[in-house]
Structures are given as structure tokens and as C-alpha cells.
Length: 141
Image (cartoon, rainbow, N blue to C red; front, side, top):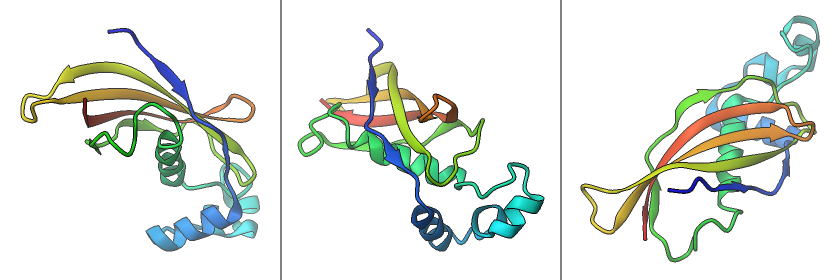
């Protein structure tokens, strides 16, 4: 199997993204939502985006690539593994994701479907990696 990497388009993380994600997730930690706290007491010295927001945006970026015929190929995520957030993402950062197919095999339980594992690297505009994870999916052929 030849490893194939696809690169998503970019997307800028906004304050609205962070506020809406806090409301959706219930994670109102002041490192995300309180500028005064973030500048005085957080490790980064400024407000940061939620790590899981960045992972969610990355998954949305996968669907903006042309890897699959999204309308005609059945697929389902099988989870996320080895998730890491090595560096923070801030409001105004533009991120993109690189999806590298690491492995592929026929499904034992769903004939005609494949188990595919992607290694994903999310980087911001200066090349700093902000999220890494492995993403297994099951997809039709």
C-alpha cells in the first residue's frame, strides 16, 4: 500500500468559534473565555482555543478535501487515537490538516468495506503543529 497524504484547505479560528464551542461543550474554563484570567494566570498568557475544537475543525476540513466521493461513499468514524495537542491555537490562527493514509485492510465484519487509518497532523500558519491524532474509519469501496 502506497502512503497518500492530502492537505486540507485552511480555516481561521475565530473568537466566535471558541465562544460557541464553550457553550456547546460546557467547557467555560477561563483560559478559553476570560481574557483577564488568560493574560494573568494561564500558561500561554492569552486565551487559547479548546483542543477538542481544533480536532473538530480538523475533521470538518477532511470533508473539504476530495479524498472520497463524499456523497456516494458510505463511511463512519471509528474513533480517535493517540490524540495530542503539543502547542496552543489562538484566535486568528489559520489551521490546516494533513491526512496521511497509514493503513488499509478489508473489513472482516462488513464485506465490501475497508478499515482505513489516517495519521492526522494539524498545523497553523507558521508550521507549528497544534494537534496530532490517528483516525480509523470504515468506508465503502
